[in-house]
Length: 388
Ligand SMILES: [Zn+2]
Image 1 (cartoon, protein in one colour):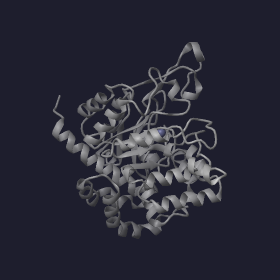
Image 2 (cartoon, protein in one colour):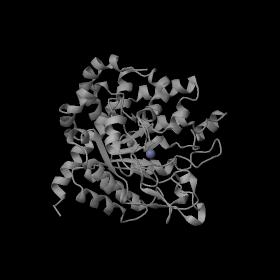
Image 3 (cartoon, rainbow, N blue to C red):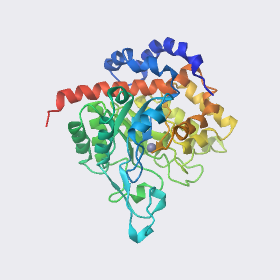
Image 4 (cartoon, rainbow, N blue to C red):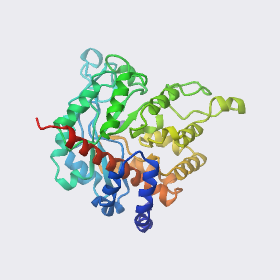
């Protein structure tokens, strides 16, 4: 289903409205407005289905899709712009564990994951191999830092110094993730670790947008209990009001599912349903700097579980059109069909969106957030990075 032809004239009409809405909704400066107005991608992008706010070029063993193939054949004329990152966690191939079987995914081995910082150099070099007009479609992100290390923030600064003019954001990095966090070598990541605060402070100072993956709850949580990490997450986000933060998958996972509401009113107050939790998050003025990505096919499955759920999800996106971003969360895809599959899982929801919400979730919010980040990070680099 292609809703786009209908949207072309609306897109033009919304360009100005979108900028105004952006000014209200996003903690960004005037720089992004100037950039938005002159963005050469904006006109051309009108025909694209979406911008991909969550995309991994490489997998858990640092292998992936050829960058030229990604831009030319997979993005092609369907995906306008895309974030670009690897995965900082490398799966160890421990002979003692899986023998001759070479695991490529974290569920395929009991051996630990470890931080593989070289991923950022790899992403930078892949980006540099592209012609300028293709680079303009990508937003590379730094991921190879350890969020439990007080020195983690230094890695981010070092990448900006070594590869100026390339990165404008950080993430996706992981704090709580089902089946993953407990496998990471060393100290377990935590939302209360000051090392993480240092990273988010620095991101705010530089203007780096942030994609953080942190499950809202533990896997197989008991129904009716408040999601175990919700309060810590809100506290963390509130400690960094000047940082533009995207909460990946709105805290959901493969088995970390939307929590159910309660039978009695009193119990429901103690433990609201997931939808109410999300509503409280997007309506909370102290969390106005936070956005939510609806990436990952594992998340789409919740949104399209039934016609009633589809309608509720569409209502949420329609009433908060500036706060959600679509992304695939695909890892090292082989072809365009794979890349578009996640998008089309959402077709029943897309069909129920207002033109404004559809446009913003698929494209506009991405452009606003990452254009602002690009402008701010380039300005920071100009003022702070000295040639080696
Ligand atoms: Zn991801």
